[in-house]
Figure 1 (cartoon, helix red, strand yellow):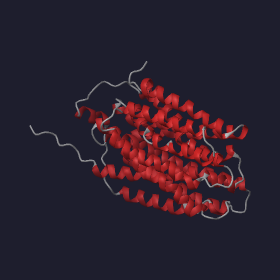
Figure 2 (tube, rainbow, N blue to C red; figure 1 turned 90 degrees about the vertical axis):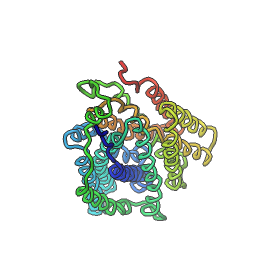
Figure 3 (cartoon, rainbow, N blue to C red; figure 1 turned 60 degrees about the vertical axis):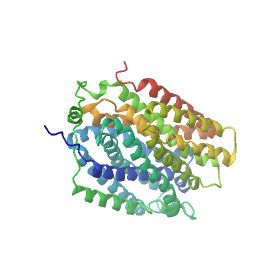
Figure 4 (tube, rainbow, N blue to C red; figure 1 turned 60 degrees about the horizontal axis):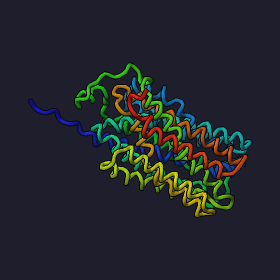
Length: 401
């Protein structure tokens, strides 16, 4: 008998790497707008963090969208996500221009609402990207593929702050008119990409059949909701968001007036990019849990070191944490998606729901800044690190009671 030929998923992986780049670009572009919006709309620290709330709050829909993906498949969900995000950008551009001259609160509300629509599309793309990259190949190399895809995501997160600085911020005074400037072009690009992919063929994989082909057929539980490590993984992503965007969100308050925080954000996201490329290579030799533990401890060390310095030296310590935050997302996600077979699509949605941590934790930190100091707000990050350590060695164990 002839041996069954291993499918070639190279083209599909290239497509997903492009999508991961787009996800990273949109997400970081949104976060990079906080300092500009705070000044343009005359907001306090907590109100400025509503940019994160509007965007990451859309991840409440991650589970319904994952159930939709289970019914319509990866490709249709991918196309729908691109379409929704593209339309959101177009509405943002025309919507804000149509109300210029109105109260800034009205313009800000339209900005937040349309970015929430964009985020709904990103949630669908995120739901597709993580499990699809994992199943496009051998299970044992899933963490490597996911880390590599996140490395390309980090290329986008490094470029996005530079893009915001060059196109929106520049040398102009922060004002509402400048906010929608680049969004129409990004929306058109996203819709064109959607139209191109509509006519391209992508493999539709059924995880239970793939597991059987790999000799891994087993009896799975009746529902994804019966796997505790999935829920702990969602909480892991929840607290991870406080780490990933906590630093860039708090940096403007750390630097104070007169310093443009966006000029320095590329260092943080650049560190994440470098860390993910290095991490993709390290994962070939080291067990994921050990790598995650090392990064958690070193990230906490950088944040702790920032308390010993002042001015830019303290800020550079915080920015350096990006190098160690780099591989946390793919490793946490990978640990939460272990041994789920036919439940993988839905589990992706469950874990993605944890991204609402970006909607809740950063406004909480902003509120702490308003009533206390940025140093106290940064102390919350040590709570996030502690949970990730527990999840790494205990909560992520499959079958945990």
